[in-house]
Length: 479
Image (cartoon, rainbow, N blue to C red; front, side, top):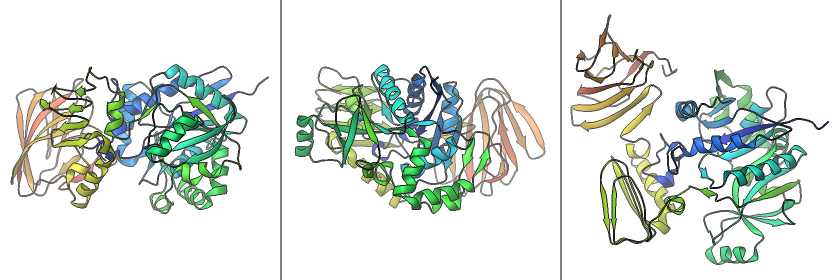
């Protein structure tokens, strides 16, 4: 009787998506955005892996590796799709994909098993999910026998933005002969003509123990440092946190550089060919590639009017955007920033993000509308001594018990029911009712109802920064 194979889906949900600014920000990066279809890229990645179930295999709940800062985005989006994770491993800071995959392998083997890991990034799109699942199922069978398997994308153009794989043999038993860095255009055209080169999708299938052994062989420094961080981990429900100080000492490296590029000729590394409409939404050019277009090649999202233009992408989020006479241009509008870029230069948007970081501007990290575990707030107006916000609190959620040193607040209920703690008093407010929170007063806002609570908050004072907050109690561990 064949041995049952445990299959552990792993979704790598870290990263900040700087090349998709201004829609993607470090506080709400691209993997949690809806850029294709009706669900986020992260949700699409989780949903695709549900199709891996096959006879003789046990498909485990998804394991997510992500950033500590995004932990509630991960849980909220999983809950929206009625998916319960096996665990969410939280990196206190980014160390690239090789350490992240090591954490996933350590978590997957913590109970004594050795499942086959199916590791995918959270920012890709697939047009034909049936073909995708079939390729992964073949890869799982090979990986269960000890091989390292990578998916190679059948190229349809001379792409210079991806790394390549040179494969040998006939499908489905192809072996990886070489990994190749991103080529120039002439080299990419030669790869396309030769037919033995494939795009590297960075989708890996291998047993957890095989990855651990490979990392210990090729990068023992990363493996050892990850083990130290893992030994110092803490757990909180579904959240698993490696030791922060220990993880800070882990060398940063990618899966490809740390291990995969060193495997050909040394370890059993194979490739499954994938021709399923794969796209890595790494830049606005890629978003245009997968978007639905008109006869002139124009794609638009939101309230946009496109006239006398060709091969242009317009993404509007909060107002009407009109463009006339453009060709091969990207226009992206958000409430606090607008990007206009040549499509062929869309990879260089990260340079703007770097400059925003050097200038310590908030547009690098946060949108005007900021998501929190309890809901969101939208800063709709501000001046030297005032700020106005729309605040939404989810049913059953509450903000922390807190106080401010430099500002007072007026709250007006727009819809729903508010439970307000104001000093030693607790009151209920409904639509059109209001209250005043004096400077220095301990207070809390909660939603005891079954529908979202929305209020308008007017702040006034000498300093209105988000860091003027003292938390006394917090449901979300932010004291």
